[in-house]
Image (cartoon, rainbow, N blue to C red; front, side):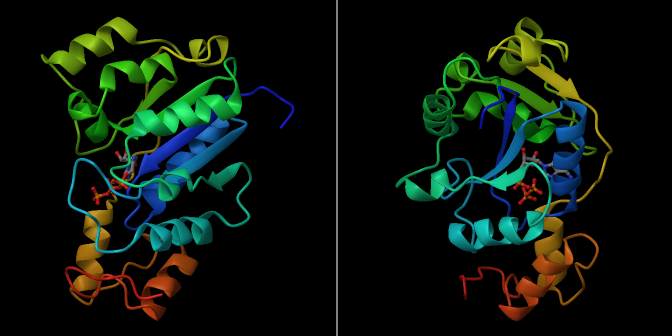
Amino acid sequence: MTSAGPVAVFGGTFNPVHLGHLRSAVELVERLDLEELRFMPCALPPHREAPGVDAATRARLVELAIAGAPRLTCDRRELARDGPSYTIDSLLSLRAELGAHRPLLLVMGSDALAGLAGWHRWEELLAHCHIVALARPAAALPAGDVVAAWLERHRVGVAALREKPAGGVHLLQLRPLPISATEIRGLVQSGRSARYLVPDPVLAYLERHALYRQEANDCQQ
Ligand code: ATP
């Protein structure tokens, strides 16, 4: 890549990826004029139970979902590491790959932001990236706690995301889409349809491989 536009990473379990993630990604690319937005599925989430569907399958679903979409890619680096998928480790390796000057944006929903103080080495994150927090309909911004105070100190406007490689927190309100992976797993498990909440190729894959039909569904590729 020759240009030095911002690169964003959208980390998550993506169990499965859905239109809330995908529409947010498209709007982010356009609003922030991103060079690239990488979905980065985690292998082993540090803060929640191991997903019943393995990481390679969740990454495959992301790849099916974004096939042909300009500037959207899937970054499998967390699948290549053992142990919990700590975001700080991914940021260090992304920074080494992108160089010191390229703006790097870590995207997360407001629900993830609210739990940030529980993340491994969370206070080091901004040394390596900016954080872009997306408002989610069911999750308020942190208030009156350590994350709220940190947010107040580091909050920046949109211009700072291009001017510096890292260090700011930017809050963004995109089109609110109250869709969650929990809801999709629940629909499929109870025999109802997830059509139009996930892209058609993802729906077809879920049906073909009978994913999420039982509560703890082991991957069947
Ligand atoms: P689950 O219901 O299993 O917790 P989820 O739908 O929140 O899943 P994740 O894979 O955990 O999806 O989310 C990855 C990231 O995407 C998180 O930062 C989350 O806040 C964000 N996100 C998820 N759904 C939306 C949505 N509808 N709009 C904006 N951001 C979202």
